[in-house]
Amino acid sequence: MATIEDYVSRIEGTCGAEKDVIVIFKYEKKEEAITNILKKATLKNTIAGIIYELKYQDTSFRLYASGKAIFRSVKNKEELNNLLAGLLL
Amino acid sequence: MHRAVHTLSLEATDLYEKSREKIAEFINAKTPSELVFVRGTTEAINLVAYSWGLNNLSNGDEVLVSLMEHHSNIVPWELTAKIKGFTIKYARVNPDGTLDYDDFENKLTPKTKIACLSHVSNVTGVINDVKRIAKIAHDQGSLMLVDGAQSVPHMAVDVQDLDTDFLAFSGHKMLGPTGIGVFYGKKELLEKMPPFQGGGEMIKEVAYSQAKGQCAISWNELPWKFEAGTPNIAGAIGLAEAVKYLESLGMDNVLSHEKALTLYAVGLMKQCNKVAVYGPSDLSKKCGIIPFSVKGLSSHDVALFCDNYGIMMRSGFHCAQPLHQIFKLESSARASFYVYNTEKEVDRFVEVLKEVEQF
Image 1: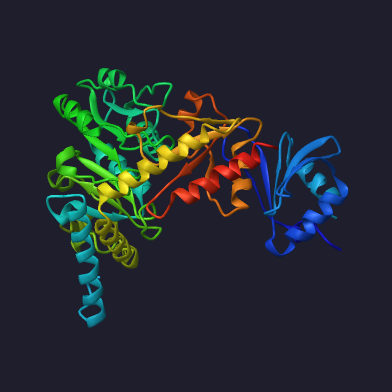
Image 2: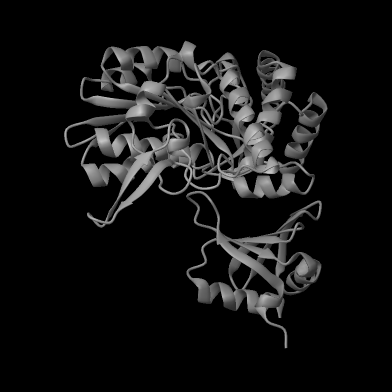
């Protein structure tokens, strides 16, 4: 059974005052991760298939074709894990 | 290095010391013994704070830094201030990112024991007149430390002309390897300073006295007193090769190339609808660094979008949070240029910026 760890390489806080969280997908799984996320989240905007602005369960986030996602306003690790589980698995 | 007598060891030692000579000549140090190899600018400034600072600063003394400093020229002083109880004064920065010279000079008082200033801001590219500040610092009886991380790679730096007491810079910002950097200090100061780290190489003798049950230790000569353990031999040699290459280009040419690209890029970026460029409008005061933001997007959005086109740039605070507080920015994106960049690449960069503006 797949887990979040199968897709995610690292989760880090972004540099800056925004306190955003950046999720970096494993290189070899990034295409699959992006496909899964785009199937489940609602697309609000995109530009050239490079940045996607998405919404999932009232949480807005951005997904990047290079295999990263930035989440804003995520309260804690548990909330982020729940979102990732819903989006990826 | 300096220990074994076999051929490869002697050859490695010779190459390492010749690298020191080359780099000392590059910054016009009086002697190679004034040049210590370290991991980078951060370690060099920590060396000053811990070796010189802990032994020369106490309650009532002041260290003066500016609010445009990289964290590596703030945090070592904050850490040692907690140990020794001295005060850190912060000189203001003008809204355009230039140094408030009046404030810096007013805060340089007889209480100031060391003034610490970036030669070039890593956020705005603003070039500070460190020679002027060094003169005023010395008139007040203070020492001067110059963070040269963003200047030594981009312009001719002459430590004797600047009359700085200490200078720090890193190899990886000037076409050299990572993990190697340089700490320069005037010989008379280095001779009085105790070692920063202990171990092999930095000692002359570790003589155990059976009667006392102790070791009597004496330090090696300069610069090895500050180079504990096996040094980064390959890094030092690589840095010297980078220096030779930069010298072949000519440092004045390096600077004029970067200034021309900056002028060209800022002109094009101003044509963008949602791009705001920070820093002084007088571009002669800066070199090849352009901090900017795109309305409605975070700096990370911009950096990740550009990354998709192979354009690499930093986003965030750039390890200079106080300066971002002055600019009232949560973060910024930073375009920077070096000897290998071209106008064609700037054109492509601005095309990509215009694309991301549409988001």
